[in-house]
Length: 236
Figure 1 (cartoon, rainbow, N blue to C red):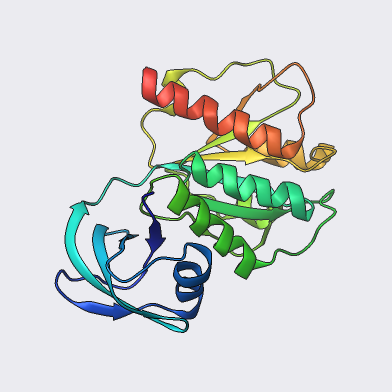
Figure 2: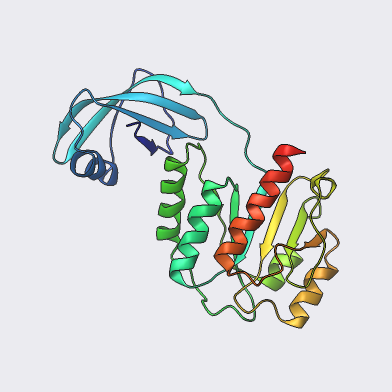
C-alpha cells in the first residue's frame, strides 16, 4: 500500500527528518510500519519517496530518497459555501478537496444556522483528503466572512458561479472562459433571503445556473456543482 503524508516544510533528497507526533503515531500504531518501510511525502513542490531509518514507539526518522512527482498547476476552481452543521460540513470539506478545489471560503448568511467553524479540524480533514486523493496541495480554507463582505471584496477578474435554485440556465463551456478563477457559490439550507439573492445577482461577474429540478442538500449541491464545472473544463 502506498502511504502518502503531507509535509508542509521543504524537502531535500538525501536528508533526514524526524516525524511529528501525529505522523509518528500513524506510522507506528496505525500502519505498524517497520524500519526499511517506504513512505511518500508531498507538498506544493512535489512528492518524494522516503525510507524509515529509525523507529520506536515515540520516535520515527525517515530519509528522503528521491523526488517522484513534480509540481502541478493549481485548480482555478474555488468554493464559497454557507456553513452548515458539523457532519454535512465535514462531508463538504472532504468531497470538495477530493474534487480538486484550490480554496474553500466559509460564509455566514442570514439563514446560516451555524456561526463558527473548527478550523483545526477542517484543515485536518482537507489534508487527509489530499493524501488519499493523490493530490499535492490541500485547499486553502479562508477565514469566515459574511456574504455581504464576500460580495463586496470579490475579485472582478474572477467569475462567480451561483448555484441558484430559481435559475433554469444550464452552465456552458463559454461561461468558464477568460477569467482568473471560478468561484462556485452554494447557499445555506433554506436558501438565501430575497435581499441576499438580489445582492448576488447584482454582482458584475455572476453567472446564475441550475443544478437540478430538485432541491438539493448543501453537501449534495457542492458535489454536483464542482463535478459539473470539472466535467465542462475537462471535456470541452
